[in-house]
Length: 104
View 1: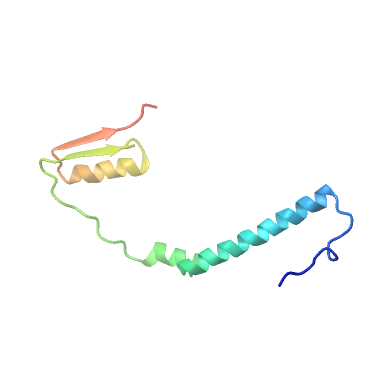
View 2: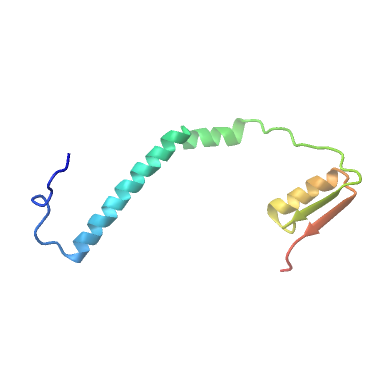
């Protein structure tokens, strides 16, 4: 069913009011879209759940295997996760451990 909304809209609207109205409508649409995505993913975690998982849940065991005779290439190994990855692979006794990084 199509409704005639011409009688509902204001007769005089300035640019600032129109901008606020459009931003409000975009905001409502984004909220609806995020709610649909949230519900479809079945994400039911709150901050409490996140903290509980971080503090009390056991991490899965670290995978270790013998890499004797194999070549391992780690990129970005000068800092953070790349550095920890390179150390982990070094403990696994690879034939060659190649660390690739940019110069600072």
